[in-house]
Length: 512
Ligand code: C2O
Ligand code: CU
Image 1 (cartoon, rainbow, N blue to C red):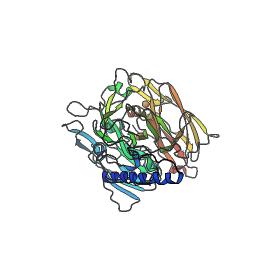
Image 2 (image 1 turned 90 degrees about the horizontal axis):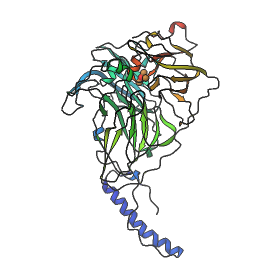
Image 3 (image 1 turned 45 degrees about the horizontal axis):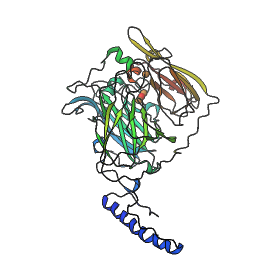
């Protein structure tokens, strides 16, 4: 039966109307056609064809419990996002009825979600009202070097009571986030993080309504107080500190309402210090669209979504449960090295309530998403970075055996392409993150995509290709298990512009 093109309705009345119209058309059209061809008309169908996902809206209030805090855009120019951001200690309710004195951006955990489009200018008037110095790193955004928030490398720490103006232009669509880069395990662990989505107005709408899910965990005692930053001592440094309270957009086990067949596009951000997420939903698969830098070359059908610290996942979720039923998105223990799955069971993250409305037919998701040229590595400089752990009286981590506070920067030239082997012979997995540039993992088994953070499983290695095409300066790379970074698994890369005089070179990296 021919179907007219219909806009997504915004209320049930419209749905009923379009159904009835379809019925009338069908009842009229079938005998009319049969008159010309001479066959017996079949009786009109008694069951109307199901609606398509694009014909209906998400259930009323579908994502209310997952609503992200926001902050006003102070600039009337539609191409400028100008905001005020204040880091301060504030009481937030994470466990029912209990106040947690969290470290926050603008008083909430997570901080305000920022959203803008490619090409927009961003101006952030930042004030530090924390008792300690801090900086903001715009994880994944290709900002100018002096906006990158690396303390002692690209800026001096912003003292308590101080302020700083961050300003840059958004060059890439995708799902990003922001967090402190000073004493980062402690500051992130206390609640300092927020989501940053950069839209590409050309993205197909068939991916579904968007839901940003910022995943974090917090170490709280039974009164809702933050556990000490050094909880677990050197074992905490070694294993990485996972908080026992799992949050989705700052909530413990919120409820998401869905309708069978009505797709949603999930943008997932892992903002924890150390927890790996392996997300599973009984009776479901996901279509992975990409992650760190937006769309991958192709979409991919997956059973579970793995998001390691610092990484993002972009996926289509097609609800498949019976109308009127409930399901739960679970965190499943994931192997990330010594003791990481021992004696642990799954944890419930998000309740999924399928509303009673009739199922709809999902929209097809394209396979080809984006043209990504593989980097030409024929003349690339090769390097090996080995992630190392030395255990003596304390835990000292490093790259090639050298902790951050003794490291000398790697040097390269603007325009160079390099191939880095990241080797991990330690007993733990490490999510390796590079500031300032996206890379391509050299692995034919993976869908081609641009990334800024990649997991290097224990006792293995990965190879990545990267081109330092722009923005000379000093950039950091480190393990995004923040306890590991603070224990020394961090280094700097200096991208030199040969046309720049030596006096203008970035400062040496001395900070601890
Ligand atoms: Cu998200 Cu250097 O970090
Ligand atoms: Cu690590």
